[in-house]
Amino acid sequence: MTRPSCPRCTRPLTHCLCALIPALHSRTRVTIVQHPQESQHPLNTGRLLALGLHEASLLTGEAFPAQQWQEPGTWLLFPGEEAVEVRDCASTGSLSVRHLVVPDGTWRMARQLLRLNPALAALPRLVLPPGEPSRYRVRNANQSGAVATIEAVVRTLNVLEAPASFDALLAPFEAMVDGQLAAMAEAQHQAGAPLPQAKRNS
Image (cartoon, rainbow, N blue to C red; front, side, top):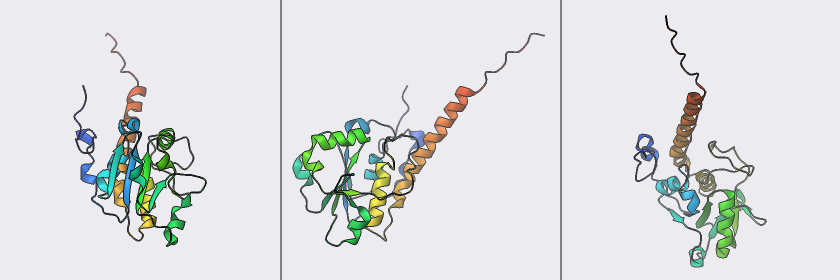
């Protein structure tokens, strides 16, 4: 039997995150390109980002029209040989970031999206500098320094639009992670708890 879930944040009603989701605005438009498999993951963060940032939109699929990425000032937030560090882009007036496109999924899914969308892969790229470890401790990443989509966008916007802060977007994310860790710990405890001893006949 499935538990009833919130139609907005899609979390179980008993763990609804909507009260923690802010309503922020940014100068930069953000498009989250979500792999279909990622959309089915209960702990994906792209949806939380789209709910909390007015200028963010969420596109789910594998192939998209090339004209979506033709707006001047469109950058892809993804590593690459000629990627520019976000802080360098922010300090250089000639590198204007008006539209930030962010693949959402595992590294394998993200690379698949780029293979299927050559116009997306051809965009100039931004990359985050080394920073604090991700708080996304409930999912494993096979690449050092990996962070959740929502963390990557928050860190990027905090640099591009300083002194504005977008940290409030992380509140539902952190609550989701903490709740999942607590559930995992409880499940582990239940699995490892000793069985009650049978009463001995007197």
